[in-house]
Image 1: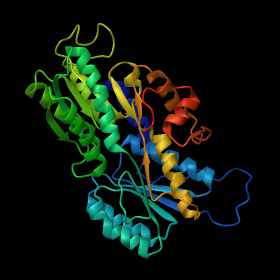
Image 2: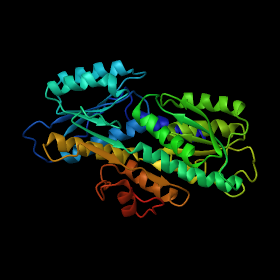
Image 3: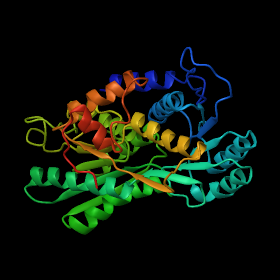
Image 4: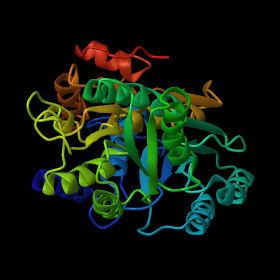
Length: 368
């Protein structure tokens, strides 16, 4: 599994080698260009995360279809103050709009106001920032709750009742996306699973290496750990690899779970970036976000603002629950999105569930 993970990571990052600057594809062949296209920027939280890169590529495709040029920016080890300075610098370049995935909305707020004063709209991604022109984000509390509901079913199947211990891998402490995604899970456990104890919540700065280090520590500190909930596949899968190395990985397959390995650990996750690990049983469940679908939808919202069309001030997106029931179909759809991004029909429904149903996937959780 480790080799597969590394190859996937390298292949996606190679698509934007040299940094997170991604130019939109050229205009449709044969089309006459009489005026320059609007330019839309995406200011990221950092560099190197394959999920981010996939989103940027989909946004570039949306730009090609919708008539704007696209560029993504970010730097490794970016701090909130770095990001705020970059936003002001980008606003001075007068793009048509700046999309921003805020590291810290509070730190970024003066830069957002600066951008607006320069006449450059700001679309906040993954955080609800009322001062921005608009915000588009996932309902992270719902995501965490659905993940916890599914986790409860696995613990009950394992022990015959709701009991056990869970450790949580978070992203960046204080960041709304990370806090709400982890908090939705832990709040549900506390309110509805009194026999289950959350023994650790470790923030990782969305770094796979930090998730792996946390897992190594937990294997020693919590010898009876039942489950790990990861806030992103890019954290959960590396942690699962550490458990596998020590023969502590539960597989979602008869005869390869706790029945044959009583000390194994169940892994449940969010974002669905590595859906192959749901298919092979490494992950028992996932909350699929689809970076391609998400990037395209967020770019659509940007285009509405740029073109002075009606848009939502705050748009909430719903994740899609993936289990063994629909994992293979979800993976096929994700591969079709990634491999045929220029032609995939991202507009077959307003929700990811609608797009998946149109593709032929079974829904195991209804849209809220």
